[in-house]
Image 1 (cartoon, one colour):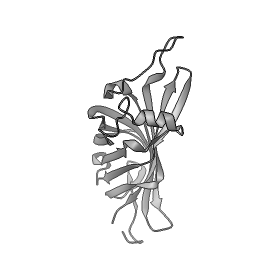
Image 2 (image 1 turned 30 degrees about the horizontal axis):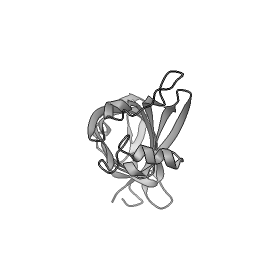
Image 3 (image 1 turned 120 degrees about the horizontal axis):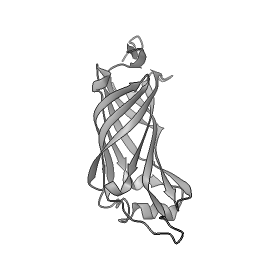
Image 4 (image 1 turned 135 degrees about the horizontal axis):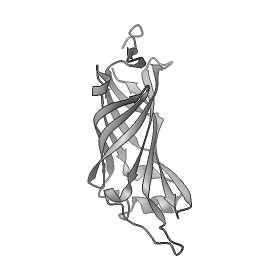
Length: 192
């Protein structure tokens, strides 16, 4: 896109990006998660290595996303726990090196809020997952790149994906909660 072309357009009262293909900016993203630990606290982590292609359609409601997360890039800032999460008891990164997400549709919720319908694959198991998406804005970087920002979240039951390892606690409950909250923040850059 040349500097004189518009990077934005109006759609139902919202300024949205021009149609095109956008890639997740590796330097401006966080693909994170939150899990309950021992029923009393939360552990936060993230996947450092993730990529996504976002195709913004002429009709924004026809847009789509594909994403790939490198399972071995998981980090909770605790080496022993990270090694356990990479093991066959959890992600089994040797046998299943990636987690994948493919959108199947988009629904408008309110203003800049949307629902991205899709399918998440973890350890070879695919389940539908709806991401609550907030469109954060659109513009052009000082380097001439057309960008937009977004955040997304969802909650999944890890056992639905075969991640069933756990330990019962003497006081009741389990070591690791079943529900995992997904938290994504990112910028996407338009490709030539």
